[in-house]
Amino acid sequence: MSKIVIVYHSGYGHTKKVAQAVLAGALEAGAQATLMPVGEMDDASWDELAAADALIFGTPTYMGGPSADFKKFADASSKPWFSQAWKDKIAAGFTNSATMNGDKFSTIQYLVTLAMQHGMIWAGTGMMPSNTRAATRNDLNYVGGFTGLLTQSAADASPEEAPPPGDLETARIFGVRIADVTARWIAARG
Image 1 (cartoon, helix red, strand yellow):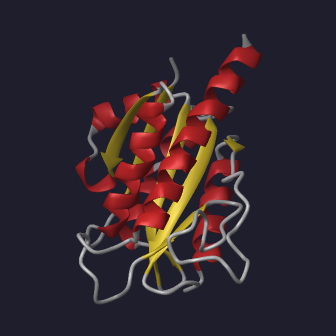
Image 2: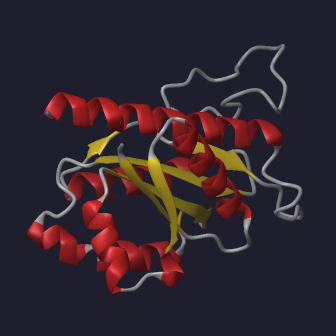
């Protein structure tokens, strides 16, 4: 059974809701998966990250990049970087913001760079976008993420209202995918 940790920051609860949907998918796919809010980390948390087979990073996009709280976690990851503790683990990421774009890709690119600095293996969504005239807001991958999971929550919507069901279903399927990719990676490595 693969071990996946979803390490994330959520400023208002929307990104936490996405993290929970990713978790549900990973568990559904048979992974041992847990949520780790960056604001609640302690020394044991770093050990849990080192023992994981995959890390899924999640952060809201604020002002075109990751939140300051997530960035603080990323900066603190220089200690495991120094020992290459996360080398060859599967990595993936997601972000949520109030607009459909909001420079979300800058945040995903930041997460990719963080993973690459740690020597990790990045896995994208593996999903086609919903980009036809018949598409509706609740179709899978409506926001159109390939490199990472993208979700949207209107600025005046509470976490009970957003992200919309289609984004949360996309997040669940993303969790399934990362669990499957991780299981295949572990099997291939023997």
